[in-house]
Image (cartoon, rainbow, N blue to C red; front, side, top):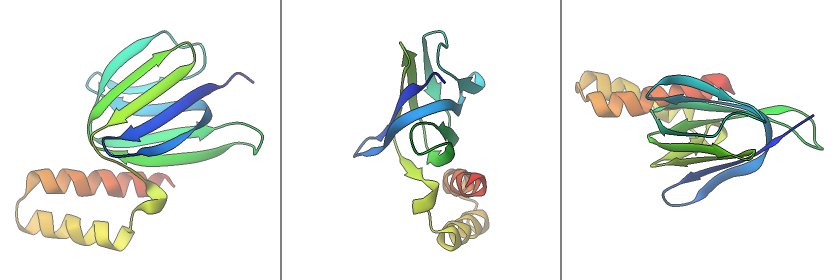
Length: 126
């Protein structure tokens, strides 16, 4: 099965790297799925969950991450997601994210509410 190499990086660190059969991300043009052989692309990432269907010797699995803005590029079966902030769902404390969402709603802080909602969506995928 054909694979694509994926790099998910945040402004301060490499978050995840590996082989995948499919990556789904939210862009300003809508949700996009990228598979091996996809046409080259450059897009702007919207805050949302990124879902990576892993491939390789260890078998198939799923990696999800909360991404808060950035860019997506694809060319020659190499996909790069460069985000302002990115967190793997397994690193997100669900209780803390829920408290942050509740606090943001009570304080009418729309930006904080969006960040917390993105985290909760990424956790829901895992």
